[in-house]
Image (cartoon, rainbow, N blue to C red):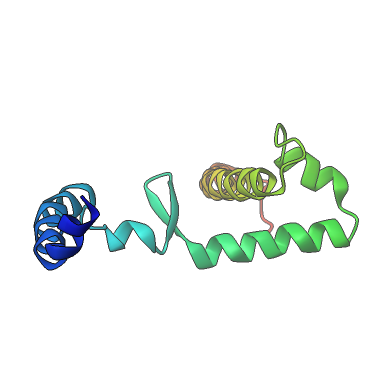
Length: 130
């Protein structure tokens, strides 16, 4: 048997290679390089969050911890547990939500302030300047 295998070694190698090639093409799919290295961390409020912005927020997280702002960090990482990566993710998302809500509230407050100014300007005793 071994003599037969040695005698037809070249022919057997060709047959094995021909049989292996279809399996390689079947099991090895074309990789999606766009998904492998994406510059997008996530999407919050219909806005893409880049990896650079996420890294800046992680640096802010580390700075807040170094400065002893533990209440701030704990309130933005509720439920993260001991996992550092999960704490980073929670902090990034919660800070983005907080900033988004703050801009909406401050915009409404500015509009409300202008409405109050217009209403109070009509009073005869309101002669002060805003």
